[in-house]
Amino acid sequence: MIIASFILFTLLAAGLTLYITRKDEKSTSDGFFLGGRSLTFPIIAGSLLLTNLSTEQMVGLNGAAFAHGLSVMAWEVVAVVALVLMAIFFLPRFLKTGITTVPQFLELRYDRTTQSIANTIFLLAYTFILIPIILYSGAVGLISMIDLKSLTGIEDDTTLLRCTVVLIGVLGMLYSRFGGLRTLAVLDTINGIGLLVGGLLVCYFALNAAGDSNGIAAGWQSLKEGQPERLNSMGAPGSEVPFSTLFTGVALLNLFYWCTNQQIIQRTFGASSLAEGQKGVLLTGGLKLLGPLYLVLPGLVAYQLYAGTDMPNDQAYGTLVKDLLPKPLTGFFAAVMIGAILSSFNAALNSTSALFSIGLYKHMINPSGTEQQTVRAAKVFVVVVAIAAMIGAPFLAGQDTIFGYLQKMNAIYFIPIFSVVVVGMLHPRIPARAASIAMIAGILMISLGYFIPAFDKALTAANIHGFHFIGIVFGLLVAFLLVMGTIAPRATPWKIEANNDIDMTPWKGAKLTSALLVVIVIGIYAFFAN
Image (cartoon, rainbow, N blue to C red; front, side):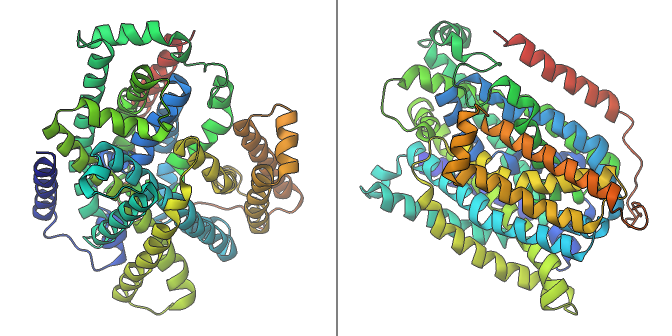
């Protein structure tokens, strides 16, 4: 029954996508990477949501909630504020330039060297951090969710993990060659609907189980009575995300992720107009407010049900799904999860191929290459990246929570690149050399704090939380850039030049919707504050 429902939903999603996108253009870089700049707000929102909601979120964030409680909802709720800033501040500037990648923006703002450094950083980070984590978390989720050990007969955990990673990787490579951005965005939207439905069903069954099958109200009451100190938006003692970090590292990581992360915002670059892009981004913000229901609450219920066992944190969600969902729904949800895994995997591969082909292939390897040659080179490159990620993913086993590890590793390149992008937008005199130095220096500073024992011990002795540390690094980088903009400014102030023929009229409801979303965020934190 599980396998039958899995196959049925997978074929349904693929068939609908093929029908909807059968006439799309995919042979040019604009068509392949940006969907011909024709994406409307429902497609943008659906694609953004599912690109974000992969197993590093479903498995990883619920695993973090299992370990640390409600305060980890910060990664969902604070993201809404970042999406508001994306819609109001960042998106109009990005769309006006007509860029395809963030490094392209850095080339326009600074110079070719800055673009090349950022491009290389993104490529290395996606290849050795992001994509392996997507494969690893996806494999762990599926192994526990549909009990692959019993299904395959593979008893050795390491062998089973490696085989599952390879299976997902191969499927992901086929998925990435399925079509261009619009094809994948449509498939993302279909899977996104299934993911939301499935996630909410898991939430329902989990709460019902916590209340001894007496309904979700009884389940919620049981959670409040059973773990009151963990249901605190301010963070319980020893929390991975104490409240103060919402204004330093957590805010900065969210801002980079939703405002300058190539993997995510590439969807918005394909908007048919600024208004459609803003509506899509803000709709995503509204949907993110539901995130704690299916990304945090099941982890809290898992703690209620499995506390005291030796279960690893990142197996809590998959085990909960396997134990509580009826068999047909388990197959459906497994298909949705596969879609989520492949969506995030493909989003990273698609962004990586765009960075490679437009940032390196067209600039250095084959500047005179045709559109068809560029797309072909991109497709070959993603195969190499995918194979490297499949080899590296199994080595991630053993982390406390995979989501915490992801945020820590992301900070290494998130913070330096975000500082250069945002200060470059706000200060027209920052010179190119300062931007290049800031990116390299930022990576070195954060890496020293993470990996050199003497620096790590000094931070611990000073009682500086890791997220506060990256906030300090960001402050130092901003100060350096501002000083360089004063003592060695660029000869002429930088000015954004329009290079896009789409309608740049803002959505009339953008500001009111943004204000409403921010008020709701504040209300959520106030309601759960103890």
